[in-house]
Structures are given as structure tokens and as C-alpha cells.
Image 1: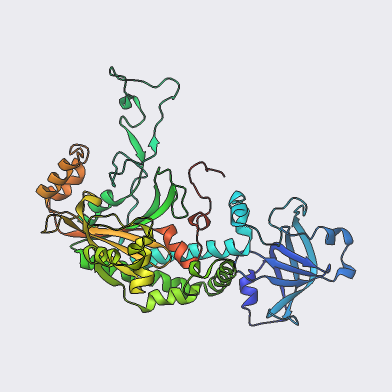
Image 2: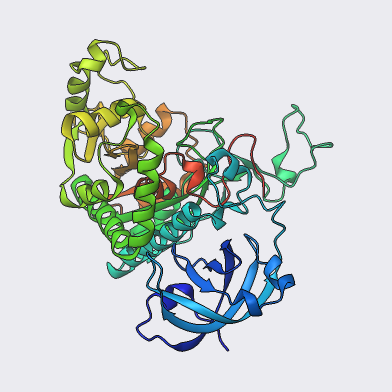
Length: 477
């Protein structure tokens, strides 16, 4: 008999049918009640075993983590909290699980312990829920852009360009470390390397994306990106996934409209399609926060926070106005901020971003027109000569979730900016071609996918929303 997913069994409208279910044992009580889960839903289905007519040797093998197949009759459950259960006629052990050694026992585990067992943590309720939400959000990203006629573009993972100018990149090489070829002046001779030049893992697909937007009109990328920052915070990963749309003929206002509409769409899609998982994650967050001081707790339960983002227009505020608000704020005057705001031009930190969203405006905020000297070379210079057409979207509990800009489409201005920053024109001549041949206003943004998953699931550490986190000193699995 073909097996039926637990989710479909629990949503069934017909009882007294013969069914087969396969999954993993979460708990086994009184030699009679198996809580079975197959990953299709947060909910288990109860399987009632006729223990008097089941061999004792088989019952001993029904342990937490064991894979089993049950065949029996789907009936209305007499127990509280479940609609249906299976009256088991045949029980088969597909794969044993040593109860003494299996790490994911039915008890509370610390998140740090679960990270150390990332290959097994998805068998817990919390991580099963997180990964299902992540999957649905990923689909929603593609669904949104495809419905709007965007072209999905796969930009290179190995690249010779540094889109951010940050320099914090992972080098890609096939040269031997114990006998590296050198030039006459002692430098590494990359001409003898696999690609004949110095290459790295990408930090962004934006520059390549721009070239496609200037031919296809509107494109998006959604792929892995890498940052070699030695950062051990709860908000940073060395390997993460980035969503980057780019639209020809869009200015900064269009860009802000697109980003707001996109974020609200994918959050609503998750709310509509992950109800059970989000409800569970909300309860988990409430339980976790009981041990925290009141000031550190979320101002809203998870589902209320997600609906809050859907129901409120994002407040649009210039960087200059934001600096005035922060400079005059109580935590700044009382020196409660770790980074005190004294003057215009300061690079805003997460604490400043969260103050604007959570304390001052009490809604998502889009900051725009940042100082040119703290933003990337490709952002369009404003008429004042000191700010650029950049924007960041700030969310409660997380700070910046989106960064974007109108791009500098004027060839001569872009060249001047590159010269000032000593960026090699020859290296980026292909990028400059988009300004030489049919240049036009265009804009785009980048959204770190894990930051979005972090917000939607209510988790507080970015290492818990990606299957196998890559961080300084950690490349396990």
C-alpha cells in the first residue's frame, strides 16, 4: 500500500479507511501510543498499537528517532488535541534508533547544542517548522517576481570583481600552497592559476545583474553569497543567500515601492501557508522570553508583529532627519547608545536603526539619501554632491533588512567616483559598458534571505535559520 503523508491524514475527511503512514517516532508511551511525524507538518499523528498482540521484540525497537511504517484504520481520536489517529494492525521497524545514543530526545535542548548537531536538529519541532517556513518563503520570492514578469538570472559564484569594494572576500585558487608560483617581485603569479587571474567567491550578484537589467528590463537573482568578515554576531554568516532585483528605468521612489510591496507579499504568503508552524514558533518565542528582562522582550507576539508589517505603510525618512532624531533622543543624550551620535555623517548601527523603528516611529522605516562617503561607488550622486540615492529598510527586532539604491547611470560621474576610490577602471570596463551604450536610470536592492527568515520565524540568531551555518571557525557538515 502506498503511504500517505501525515499532513494529508490529519486533513482527511474520510475515516474508517485503511491507511499506511511512514515516519519517525517522536515518543512512545505505555507501549501503546506512538507519536509519528514525517516532516510534512508540525503535528504528529497518534498511532495506537495493540501491544498485547505485538511481539515484545518489536515493541522494544519503537524508540525515539526510529523510522517505522504503520498500517491500520484511520479513526476519529478519543484523545484531546487530535482529530484522527491510526488503529495499528501492522507495525514494521524500518530503521532502528539507539535510545541511549540518539541526541534528539524529547526534552528541551539549548540552541547551542542543536547547532552542534545541525544534521539532526531538523528532527525537532522548532527546526522542522523553521525549515518549512524557509522553504515556503523561498517559493514566495520566485512566485512574486515571476508573476510580475521578472527574469530570473543566475550570476556567477566565482568572480573577479568585488561589488561592494569591501575587500572581505574568500579567494578561489587552484595554486599549490606549498609551492606557490611567484612573479619577479615576489607576488603570487595568478596568471598561472586556474582562471589566469585572481578570483573570489561573490559578495553580490548586483553588478552582473545590472548588465542583464539593461537588456531584459527587470531581473532578479537569488543565490548564495559569501563574506569573509571575522564577525561572530547573531546577525552575520560567512555564507548566506541574497535576493537582488534590478529594474531598468526605475528611480529611488520606484525602488522603495517595489521593496515594500515585495516584503509584504512574501510575509503574507508565509502567514497564509505556514499557519501551524508560525503558531508553534510564536509559542516557542513566548516561552523563551519568559526568562528575559521585560525590556529585552518582544513588544508584540510573532503573528501580531508580522501582521503589523502588513498593515502599516513603511515610514520614509531621510538620513538627515534620522540623524536629528537620534541626536536628540533620550538614549543618545544619556549615553545609553554604545555608539553615540554626535554629527551628520555617522554610519548608523543596529541599535540606532532599532530605536527609529521600535521606539520612535513604531513601524517599519525606509531611510534614504545617505552620505556618499559611507555608501558604495555605484550609487547615484544627488545634486547636493554629498549624498547618494541610497535606501535601507529597517524592521523591528532586526534593524536593516534591505539595502538598495538608484544606480549612478552617468558615465562621467561614475568614472570620477571610481577614481576617487582607486577602483580599477580596466577591471570593471565590462560594467562601464552599460553606461557607454544605452545608459538609463535604473535601481535595485539586496535582501539577505536569512534576515527575512529570521524576522518571519521570530528566531534571534541567524545561525538557526539556515540548514548548515558557516561562521568563523565553523564549517562542520
